[in-house]
Length: 211
Image (cartoon, rainbow, N blue to C red; front, side, top):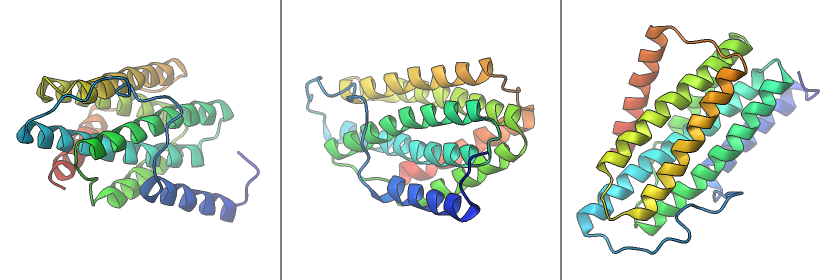
């Protein structure tokens, strides 16, 4: 466990929450859409793409909170390193989706503070079960997100190559995170837990798409 006091860790969590929710997101890697031309999209297609990217942005808000909660209670330094690396790549996703929403003239979900709070609580809860379950939760989360992104690729307007490039890179990153977590010893989660996670994901998707 790190040498920070309990108060320091709490302040660090609050600082990270405020940065994630309210500060402009920044990425270490260039957006996959950066070099692609901006194809004009009809109004309905633009609104559909903006809604899908709003959902993905909310998912990345929740992901940042999940990793923060998991890292906070992780016992093993190797696991904390894995979580921090995944969080850095998810921060890229946060910046990419935020930029794409702006390009499409959309807006972020007003429920993002709720998704952050829920993600943080879930991350802490699974982290407290032990490192192997912590890793298993990470692997299952990424697997379900990968499936979710695949569904978005099927309904994304065909002419929206910029959003497609972002989602495809996000999907590759999520798959790599899941593989790393399994190789590090993650336990397979029980079927009822996997189902509950899918249901929670559907709630986030539905509400974020609406607003």
